[in-house]
Every structure is written in structure tokens, then in C-alpha cells.
Image (cartoon, rainbow, N blue to C red):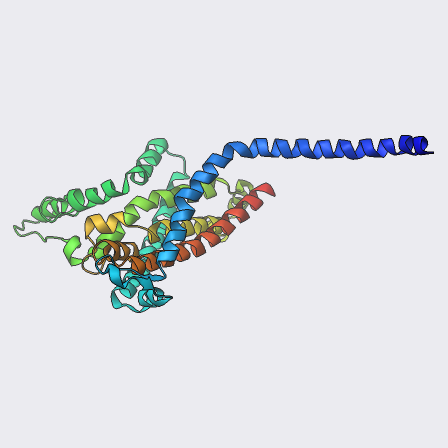
Amino acid sequence: MTTATARISRPGQATAKTLRNKASRQRALDWARRAPLLPALIFLIIVTQLPFVVTLIISFLNWNSLSPGTTGFAGFENYVTVLTDPDLRQAIFTTVILTVSVVLASLVIGLGLALLLDKKFIGRGLARTLLIAPFLVVPVAAALIWKHALLNPVYGLINGVLTWVWSLFGSDTPPQLDLLSQAPLMAVIISLVWQWTPFMMLILLAGLQSRPMDTVEAAQMDGATPWAIFRHLTLPHLRQYLELGGLLGAIYIVQNFDAVFTLTSGGLGTANLPYAIYQTFYFANEYGLASAAGVVVVIGTILVATFALRTVFSLFKKEAAR
């Protein structure tokens, strides 16, 4: 009986052993696929997550390097200061104004350029390359171009053109436009719009080229005007692309430091929150307060990024459903 029972149970045991072997092989294959990514993951955690954890810890400390003897636990005092201090609150307001202005202007201009590049004309490839070029310029270099080559009141291109146009009317005293001192925040907005418009244009151009052209052609055959086609077909189709461009642009512009630092050095009401963090950390030596302000920027960026990721996933689902 014992021998018979053993013989009967062998197939089941073999099946279980086979399943275990398959499971172990599958786990080995999974780890073989994941193993090349582990160094990158570890590097990413060390470079990004650990510094953020340290920043989060410091944000709860009352830490000024000029008074090391007073370092201690501050609780949420630094966060309260970020939201109540007049200078930091003004920096938050400036950040909101800067981000909203740049994103909206870049979207509107980028939409117009995308509509133009969606048409076929001679030299479209060259025009597309030239329009993309500002986005490829290093941010500091772009800010320096605007500060010295374009906006300088003495030898800048804009004032040079104004002087030339004014001389055509016989005037010896042309107006001098000095945006860097008269409207510094506008100067920062213009430089960022110039740099980020190509980014919006590329996203919207991709959206335009994914339109169902049979619907557009059917509307044209029915006598629909170009404005009606744009309003009822093109614009609804571009809604998710407009959202994606706006959200991605907001993520980057909220963290912008180069343009403010290079053009105005944060003066005359142009200091946004990243620049205020720089001043608080390097000049006031308030490490805890600067860390709290940095955490606030990260939280705001995460909230915007969450909406951006949802928009991206919805676009992927839409494309996969076709």
C-alpha cells in the first residue's frame, strides 16, 4: 500500500515541482530584466530623494549658520513664516503672476504658430527649425541675450530699431525704452515667453497633426467656415494638448531662476520664490526657512505634475483606443 500510494502521488508531486520551477525561472527572468535598471534607480534615489528628505528635516529646524548656538526644533514655524512673511508672500505672488502670464502667452502664440506650420508652404522645414531654436538655447544664455543684445537702453536692438524708425520722421530725440528698469517683471515675462513658445508650439503642432482629417474635410464640404472648423473641431481636439502644454510649462516656470537672476537680480519686485529661497539661504543664512520654502515649491510642483501625468495618461489611452 505504501509503495502504491507513493506511486500514485508522484504525478502530483512532479506537477507541483514543475510549477515551482516555472515560478522560480519567471522570478529569475523578472530580476534579469530589472537588474540593469537598479543602478539607475539607486542613483536616482541618492541624487533626488535623499536630499529632499534632508531638506524636509531641516525645514523643521530653527537653523541660522550665523547663530549656531540657537539651532533647535522649530516645528511648523518656518512654514508659517513662509506664508506670512511679507517678502516671501510677495515672492509667492510674483511666482504665480510670472507662471500664469508666461504659460498663457506662450500657449496663445504657440497655437498661432502651430496653425501656421500645419499649412504646407515653401520653406516650412526651415521656418520650423528657426522657430524651435529659442527653446534650444541655454536659459542663462537666453537671458543674457535679452539683457544685453535686445533690452539694453544704450546699444540694444529694440532701442536701435526705435531710433531708426523715429529718425524716418525727422525727430532727433527718439524715445528710449528701458524695460529692465521701467517694467522689469514684463522684461522677465517677455524673455521667458520667447523661450517657451517653441515648446508649446511643438506640443500643439503634434496635436494638430493627429486630427481626424476626414471630419475636417466633411465639414469643409458642408460649407463650414475656417473659424467654425477651428472653434468646433480643432479647438476641442486640442484641449488635452493645451492642458498638457500648460501644465508642463507651469512645472518648469514655477522653478525658474535663471531669467530672474540674470535680468534683474530679483530687484524691483521680480523676485520669485526660487530666487527668494536663494537669498534666504545664501545671504540671510536661514537654512531652516529656506528649506521650508523649498518644500513649498516642491509640493506645488507635485500638485501640478499630478494633473500633467493624468493628462498624459488620458492622451495615451485615447491614442491606444484608435
